[in-house]
Length: 166
Length: 166
Image (tube, rainbow over all chains, first blue to last red; front, side, top):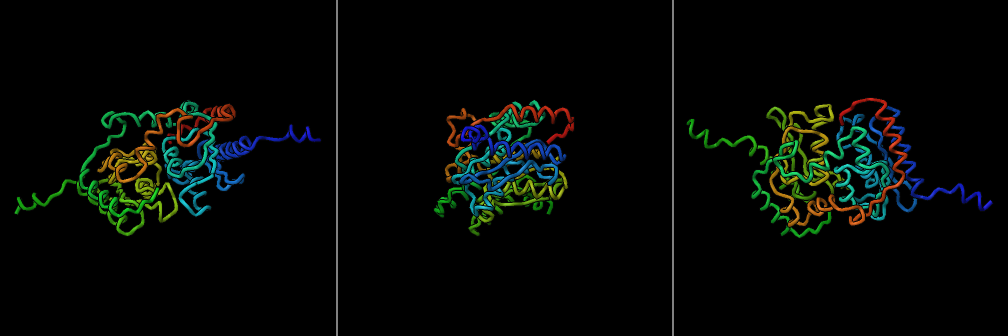
């Protein structure tokens, strides 16, 4: 009996990743968006789960991870995911990786890589490549103007000494 | 009279950046969040404007650019910002840079740099640095599991031939 129980046990990490993958498949099959799912776990319980809703919401930021992070923060009533673990079916794109750093979870598990995503036609890897290019070489032109005006505002922000750790 | 008019004219780029900066200052003075503002312009008109609402919304993704992109897409009823120009008071953080690439505007103007933001205590530059580190060297641990399962789902996605350009 004990042996049987052990055979049926799935490590926690696999269990939660399976749920993220289930959401990815469901989303693809429903035609609502790409095959991407994400769950966020705290104290062994799922506190947020989401899938890609870019098409459904007409919102290019509605990736599974972004939606799950917003949901978890709303649930916890804070903008920080202390002690939370993120399970996402694919390596986060640069936007989602940035959001993960701003929300500061304890750990991130991912399944497919950005290269797998590129082969499936998604731009993640292309966007990663853009990050290290000088401004004139990017596919979207970026131009800096009026820098000094905002430097002065940042000086005022420093003087306010709010010490908020975004 | 003609000469006076010319003296008072502000180039369009400056006019819209001034509005982004005005939003940044307003937000800081109201105590709602950091000094960051953004406007999105199409055909010479502002179609979306936002400021950092991370603290107000308890949402780490509520940066000025993300909120403005979501607002503009909602206004245009699409997930793509064709022909739009983004004016942001600071160089976009990695999350916002990613969102800009997914939304594909024509151009981006920014004022302060990521280095200016770092000096004011914001993590933007630190997060940029994390992007090029191998997974074990990152400040947040990332681990890959169950890659093959999602590769198979991506194969099914390719077979569906939806050809959606996210």
